[in-house]
Picture 1 (cartoon, rainbow, N blue to C red):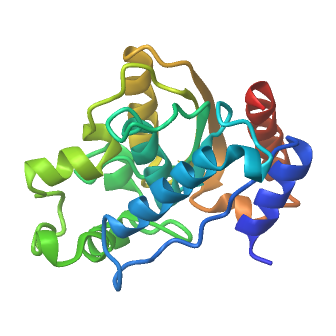
Picture 2 (picture 1 turned 45 degrees about the horizontal axis):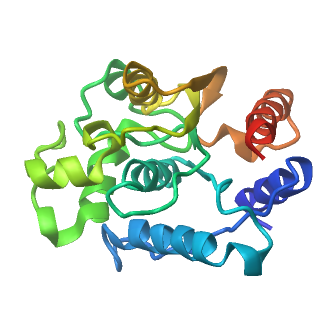
Length: 230
């Protein structure tokens, strides 16, 4: 069992909610927007079939870590445009929110465990595929077309008029640390209620070690946030 599935089971059992765990299409075979469309379709299906699934259509949230956090944020930001029921929450764990690669943490953490900024340019090229080929050739930052940037990156999305309550968790030694903080601040400035968990002594993917003290503490905070809405 992957640690993601173990966490999903913990959320379901401890927050007393049903968890839909999407096996979305992956790049490079299926570049953006395939994964986002998969998750949006699952969200719409859950809302449209709430009675059949035994859930409350007005209490459906979105959660994800890393690129999954990106997808969750994109679906949340686009719910009005797509005429979907408003999510009751979004839980974003060390999310990717931008591709400019200009933050201090992005410049600083070039060789940290599991994930670092050295991989980011390659990742974004793979994620977007041929639709924006060459945008990251110089490996120093983002040269995405403006329309794609506004569509595909949470930091550049048009925000909905009513933003779901948000939980943002960041890892200290993570190249994505600063963009997670900046995104949460952007949501707060737009009127959202944001709950923070800026973990210390941690790196990207640190919660794979589920039995450690820091992960147990973070999972408790995630569950507290979920229980408030479920």
